[in-house]
Amino acid sequence: MKKQIFDFNLNFKERTILYFFIGLICVLSDLILFIIFSNYIPILEANFLAYLIASFSSYLINKKFTFKSSNSRLSLRRYLLVSIIGLTTSQLTMSIGIIFINFLNHNILKIISIIFSAFIQYLGNTFFSNIKK
Image 1 (spheres, rainbow, N blue to C red):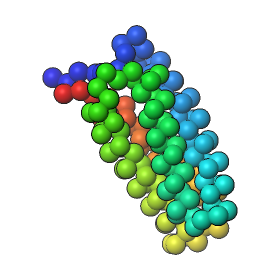
Image 2 (cartoon, rainbow, N blue to C red):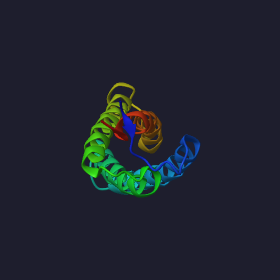
Image 3 (cartoon, rainbow, N blue to C red):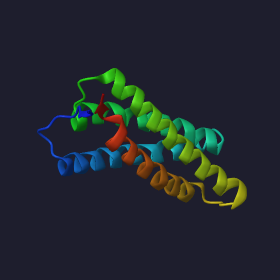
Image 4 (tube, helix red, strand yellow):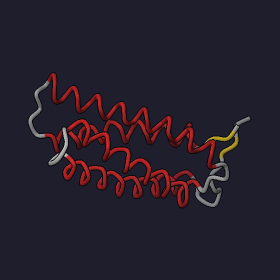
């Protein structure tokens, strides 16, 4: 039987709302960092670096406030796996936009990649990262 390891004082709806607002802050950080970094380094590298910083920030904030995990090693490992899947989604979206579609506005392309990867990460973090065996 799998046991949830988040604080039961927050119901699913409350956790989802809190996760959304924390995610929004981290997504905005990702976008702002991407815009700054893309002025100095190649687009895919800027995306990679901004995504990593925002994901790690999201993990720390969500662990403390949203999920209040009692097993940080297990949840970090699972969170990282979900983040890698989200990063891969983001990089693929950016690559397809740049290489195959020749999408010229990289900031709009970044927003599209954020939507895809955020959806993937939300599902993974809600139903996989916060479950204890």
